[in-house]
Length: 269
Image 1 (cartoon, rainbow, N blue to C red):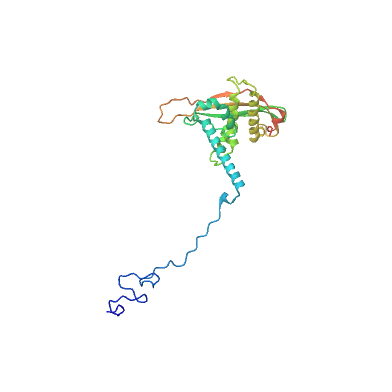
Image 2: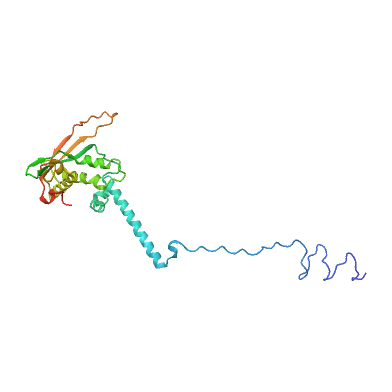
């Protein structure tokens, strides 16, 4: 039989269809089948966000900001550490560097309580004053006792924002006096006379505010001398406590202090 005779089983030439099960020759038409899925149009890349914060600054400014933040952080850490050492119980650090801690704290950041061992007040101390007032006819009258601490207490009670003066001025002046005087009211050290002048000026200003001269003389006059005393009474224990304390007040009277002429009209402001 001729090799070129056509038949159902004869193999076709290069232009004919490939025999079943035989792969098509290279360069021939692609094999029919399911077309490959196309990826579609490419999606655009998301827009980049502009830099924010210190990233928008140039390098020198970034370095400056970083240094400023570092200084602030160090300052905050030092301040917190000093405050902790100030209120903490005595320890090795405070014994060695107590002077440096006090120089950092006083007077702006003073704390009058101790960490882990608070010492609440167990006494009520009130400061009272009276004055000798010269009337317009040359006579001298003595006023009654003015309870200055009670006046401060009434000003603070119910006040959401009491002033520093109402809370601490009189109390600190009295503490200053006690720290610079002995039990006989004699000054100890160079600051004794300073504490007397400070306390005297405060009470003269308070008497002027309370119109003590007008109340004593009914008109014009001037303060000649003032006398200060403290009234101390123990805080009574709670009902469930078995502790027994005396509630009888104790008084400490200071000598009469002459008031200079420039203070007599209401103190030096």
